[in-house]
Amino acid sequence: MAETLGSLTDKISILTLKIYHMAEQTRRKDVDKTHVEESLRKIKILQMQKSDLEAEIDELLEKYGAGLAKLKIYRQFKMYNDPKYRIQ
Image 1: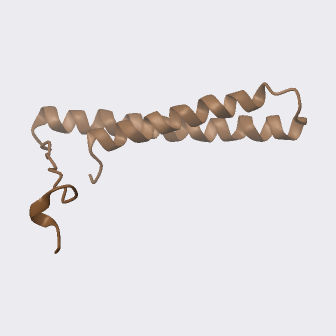
Image 2: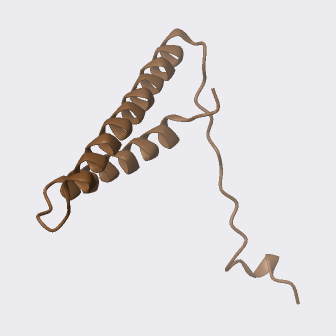
Image 3: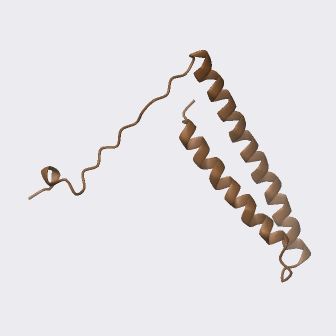
């Protein structure tokens, strides 16, 4: 599995925001019925994607618990604002 718990959580939070804002579109009074129907269709797709990611989190947590997967810690190595990496 290429995903990490953090990346899955990030994707779920983005989908949650998209669902929220798409739901706002369904309550607009200045749009036609087609726009509302299309927004509702998109909400269903977004919810399915969110559900899939939640299932991936469950699967990953089960693998962690069973010792079949290990948490990897990725270190960030930042070079900016560090004088020793500045090219003269």
